[in-house]
Amino acid sequence: GAPERVLQRCRLSDEVKKTAREAQEALMGQGKRMICLAELRTSLPKSFAFAGSSFEDANFATSGYELSGLFALEDPPKKGVPRAIARLFDAGCRTVMVTGDHPD
Image 1 (tube, rainbow, N blue to C red):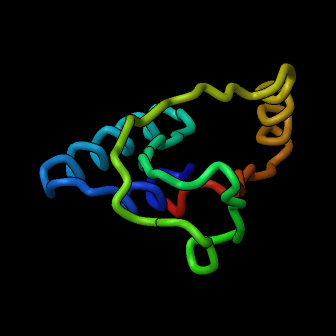
Image 2 (image 1 turned 180 degrees about the horizontal axis):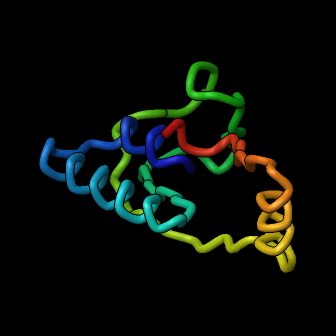
């Protein structure tokens, strides 16, 4: 999931948190999309049914996870987008990218 959400659910030293945030910011600065992976080993019965759609209403542990890693993905613009933006710029338009990604 989103590093800013997942990292706060992991058991990490301040040093590891700082290193993870720095790595995330550096890779995002290169235009990469970031995904954080963490795990929690449990001994739930085979009949256990996961429920809930958020940290607040989940029927399983939502903290104490072990960080597995940060993954960076490239998500380049679709073919033709750079040319279209250049044409808009030449026409006097200002392009603004709005996403639902990281708050920064």
